[in-house]
Picture 1: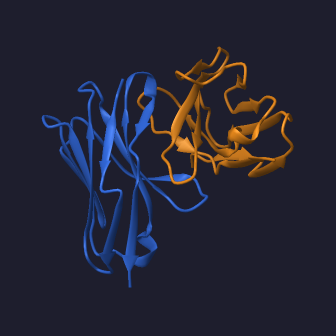
Picture 2: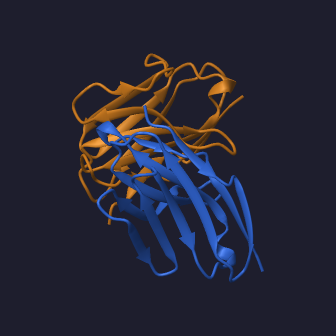
Length: 115
Length: 111
């Protein structure tokens, strides 16, 4: 149980392109989803928290107009990296939780490479 | 906000030996402390967690201890095996169900 699917697993695209990443909870309803970014050999850094049906809450230093998050249903959240540049290249991972005080279950991550 | 420090950054042990990774946290209100194992390019996998009302929890070769007064918690792996080699992250949950992660420990188990 508690499976989170993330798609795509790997994206390579040109600078200036917008990229959408999907995060789905397959066997449970996720009231809250989290988006993390992980640079090589570093820890997971929370970018934003999204609750179904409401606007995402972004961490300090994360541009909300650059990283658009939509959580339109209890099983799907999307992260769109708009006008991506090489410095946005990273490993993006989502997680999902059924609610407060419940464990977070992670997706497989998306490796984004901007040329 | 919460700050989590993790030590050591790298740890090499001989197969069969024990490994201990330690974390400290700053927010006394934090009440949930999970440990994740991450292999290269893969998702973090929850291996064990502990809540603030418990001092110790064990699952086969893995155990976690929590000292709320000192605000630190530790991961103990006994009888290590080569497949235990990975990066291990501790985390602390703060307000809003947000997890704050430690910097990670690269564990190498030598056979």
